[in-house]
Length: 147
Image (cartoon, rainbow, N blue to C red; front, side):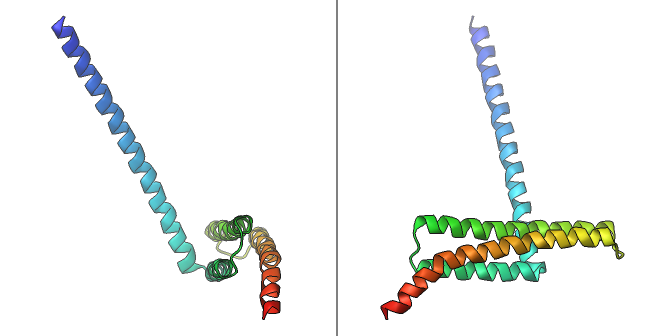
């Protein structure tokens, strides 16, 4: 009977050790994927001038939001607008890099693909600008009238 409990406890310990090892490996793999994602963020802002312009605009929007004391719903709108613009800029850059890799020479189809991708960034950027104007113009107007 004692041998049975000894074997059972050993199996439980081995199972727990195996289980914990798998969890640790899973977490390590997930952390590596975050590392690659952050490398991508560094890459986009280092290599893409338009991404830096969008980042500057995002910083200005956040500073304006803090200075003008926007409410939580307005912060949600600003956050989503910033996130969409940066995300589409990243996707656009990835599409352009893939297109250039596939066809380094001039190609009308590749040009159209790149133009469509850039158009998506333009549309979301204009939309983000409109969101910003809707939120900030009334507050700026109030601020100017208060003086």
